[in-house]
Amino acid sequence: MICQVPECIDVSYFTMKNTDLKKKLKEIIPNSTASQTVNSEMRQAIYNRLLLDNPNSQLIEREIDTKSIFGEKDVYSNLEKQLPDYYLFKADREKPIRNMTVVV
Image (cartoon, rainbow, N blue to C red; front, side):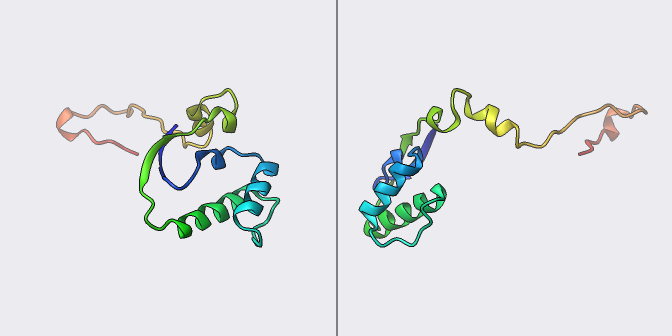
């Protein structure tokens, strides 16, 4: 996956497991109050601290290895499960083209 990330953020933070995140959190923010059982809280704390320390950090395009996050499946197959289903259907009564409307 290609995304824009501040240059001060190492993309490996997005894919780190809990034990590695704990180590990195203690290294970057020794007295952090972020829950060390919730990965998203630790990532957010690290992200915020690095942005505070580097306020002029520019966004750059980087690639994130999604296989380490989602496994062997591609990103779309995981997102597809959460997308709503939409179906197009033909009306029982045909209308002339000039009066055609789309019903959502």
